[in-house]
Length: 202
Length: 202
Image 1: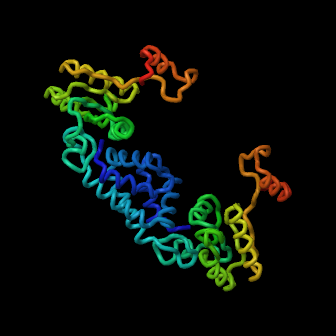
Image 2: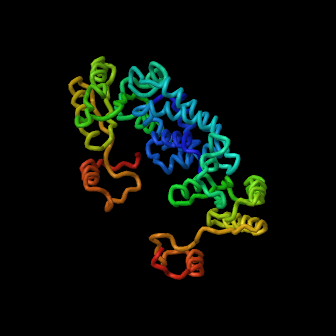
Image 3: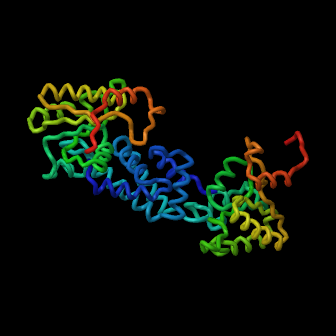
């Protein structure tokens, strides 16, 4: 058997990754030591760099190594649309899969009073101030369709209405490939209530 | 969306881990940046240390940060038993789940001519020399029960026989909790052919 000290320390350290338990960490360690020591060194350097240099965008709160992130700084984005998401990965998903050309606002969470996450933690004051500047015309609410995401969307919609800004919510309904008989009742009733005139153009 | 440069570099670097693709790597990055920057720094340090300081035991070829690993160096292990395994993780599994008190020999692979893995790569010459020293009385073949593991075991058994050492093979049969009707035919025929007298003492 291998010596415990260093190996075990590395196994423990790998367990800080989400979804990585003892067995997986062990497999990772042996893989790296046997087959990819160079990769391990690169990973170590990247981790250091990322932790030291990546902070939050002053405008949209997402992760960035600059003061203002690439999207907020871009001259070609529409500044009258602001899309609110819970996490940077949500913004990344929208960015990769839609042709949205407006800006984002990343809450870095959702309203969850029981976990101590309130308006302050999500930067809602800064968002309100920004909506007051008059540039934003549409506030797109793209929080998750969980209970907490819905509550957050409601609060944001109220905020937009007060400022005379149109809040919109991403559509809820049957996902692509969905079979009605296996759908949960909430989704089905949302989809039915939200039906629209059928058009071939879509 | 977050800036691509550093984030994307870290995502790419994480993909050197086995079983980690783009999505998982992305989830890991956001988790580390949002919730465990300290853990990421510790991980980076451990990776560096491990890659720089962990090499192979001069006696059994397993991973260790010393010349000779803890088990080979221990005075309390039986030096007349030598258990051959394919990988350090196999030795670790035996060590954690059996009360074996002998020594190990870690091939760091299995005979696989098509992949260019022959006797040299597995240190079979060193093993043969060691068997010639006369200290080892039993060579326990604990390579995997795959085709390549079986072939490797056969070669090792031959080597042991030539030196007048008893080769033994870990038992093959029905695993605990196994139901006969779902077992593959090879395992079942091995288990049947390898039946032993039933004793309550076991």
